[in-house]
Image (cartoon, helix red, strand yellow):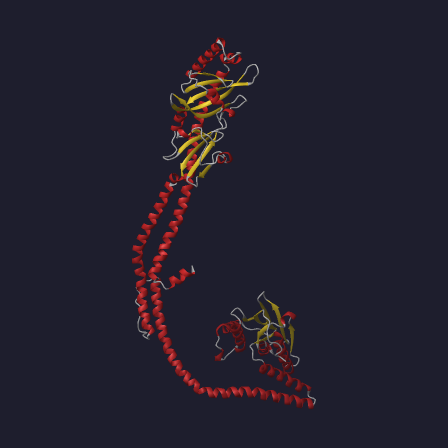
Length: 604
């Protein structure tokens, strides 16, 4: 992604528009195509499974119905008195026995005639004697039968076994479906022979041919051991299932659909509990997925046609976007060489038109700024001439405080010599204030330093207004090290004396408190019980806090100065606010962030 972003960073805008337009077309179409292909494949597989299931149920019902008729015929033969007499007959030779056998053959012929599909009915006794409905008894047929794979699978519980086999008849191979039952002696109830009812294989083939799976799909039947009972290729009848493991059919649930032979074939099977057979449909997966493939081809063709149409339309669209931008590039080159007189023609009200307007305004602003820079250079030259005078004034401002501090110390010493404690205390307090101003060069100090300076200031005011006011500090221990702006608290206390002293009949009371406002800030409140502030004056003070220019002098300069310094060092959410009720007093609130000051002890 980073490589693509790097490559696109220097690519022309027209190419970028085409690339992103192509992506906007290709990605949704590919997503829709993939989802459609997947969903159609699932639907086609489910449709094939349902159809195959219906085909197999139809064939299974026909075959079971047909087999039931064979079961009835075989039971009639086993219970026929002629067969019972033949079984009870003693020696298997002699005219007496031959008569019984002829009666049995006659009975077998009648039974064969009752079913038009029956090709032959054979009775084998003691593995040697044979009676057939067609009278055709090949030499050694009994011995051959006992050696067949299916012979040992014929049930001994009176049940039957169905299988298919190839019989040689008149020098040709004839596929037949055979129902086999064991014959029991009526005296000993021991098996003494076997009954074989051969049915023309064409009957099953006719049943299977009535349904069609797909053009290349086919249907086949397997017995309980995995031998082919039916297959379109008659050469496979009676042979073991090839290419697939028969355990697939024994382990999977009935009605399951599987992809086998490396996904090339799609098979569905059902199991007949009555017959023990498995009816299987096999469809080439390529044929099954052909409709889904056509959907994919349609999506691909649609994508290519849409891309071609998008490219043709995108050329005209990109030209309409790029033309104003290139025109603006031309004017920007003129501005680069200092020509501020050029203006871009605004041809629309869209984003490009707004961009052109913004460019024209920018050029006008640049022209005015260049003019301002020119005049500012002139003013800088004039200012350089006055810089020397400013250096002298700064030097004087640094010398005068030190001179005043030394003078106050001299006065304090003289007062102590003459035992004038009040004068010495006041001189020490003034020196303390002056030293606090000279020592600290940082704008932020701990709250404890500001409180000490205010205590010194109030001590001086006690000498001036003896007995006319009281004060109280309510500062919790956790607040002493919090940071605040230097000289931000003393002006507020001074404001109490300026507007509250002598304005009411009661003594002035000043209270300084600190408390936490929320998780990020705390407040310091300076309140008094003075005469309060009239509403119009209060509104003017609040307006001054928002927009007053302190360089112009006037009222509320101290409050505005404190508020501006707090807002500048911290954020706009912090600062000073004033609340007052006429006749009850005034409260000035400082809102400051909860942070600990790095520098401590500036108050001495």
